[in-house]
Length: 309
Image (cartoon, rainbow, N blue to C red):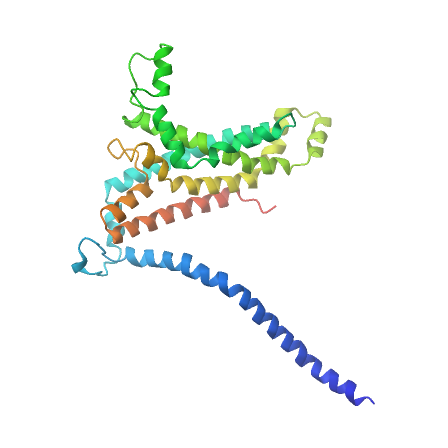
C-alpha cells in the first residue's frame, strides 16, 4: 500500500525541476521580444555610430571607401573652432533655460497646487505651451520678433521705450535672448507638471505640524517643500537638461543658426556635417561627443542630488 506513495515522492523533485524549467522558458519567451527590439533599435545604432566615428566616410567621395582612421575625427573636432562655438552656445543655452524653467515651473506648480475655482482650467492652460509643437511655437514667436512688423518692436515704439527698431533675430545678443525666452516660455509648463506631482505627494499634515510649531510659510517652503522635492527636482533637471542639450528645432526655426553661426547648437552642427556636408564619419564623432557630454552632466546631477531615501 505504501509503494505508490514512495514512488510519487520520488518523482516530485522531477516535477518541480520541470516546472522551474518551464517557468524559465516562459520568462525567456517574454523577455526575448523587447530585448531583440532594444538590440536592433538602440544598441546597434549606438555601436554603428561609434564604428563610423572611427572611419573616414564621405558620401560625396565614395571612391575613397571607409578607411579606418582611429581617433582622427575626434582630434579634428577638438581643433574645430565651430565645434567649440556650438558647444559653448549649447551649454549656455541649457544652463540659462533650465534655471529659469525650474524657477517659473515651481511657481506655476505652487499656484496649480492651491485649491480654488477653475483649478482644472488653470492646470490645462499651464500645459498648453508644452503641448504645442516646438516648430509651431518658434514660427509664432518669429513673427512677434520680426524687426519691421513684429509685436515687440511695435509695443516698444508705441510706448516710446526705444527710438529705433531692434533686430531681435539679426544680432548675436538679441538672438540668443530671443531663443532663451521662447524655450523658457514653452518648457516651464513641463517643469510645472512634474513638480506639481511632487507637491501633491507631500502630506498636508507636515505643513500643519510645522505651523503648530511656529514655522512661517517661508520657513516651511525652505525646510519642508524644497527638501522633499529634491528627487523630483533631479528627475526634472535630468530630463530637461538632456532635452536642452539636444535642442535643434527651436534654433533652426527661429534663426537657422545665425547670425554668423552664433546661435548654432551642437545638434545643428552635427546635422550640417552629417547630412549637408555628407561627412558621416566626422558627424558620427560629433554625435559621440554630444552623448559623452550629456552622460557626464547626468552623472554630475546624480552624484550631487540623488537621495536614495
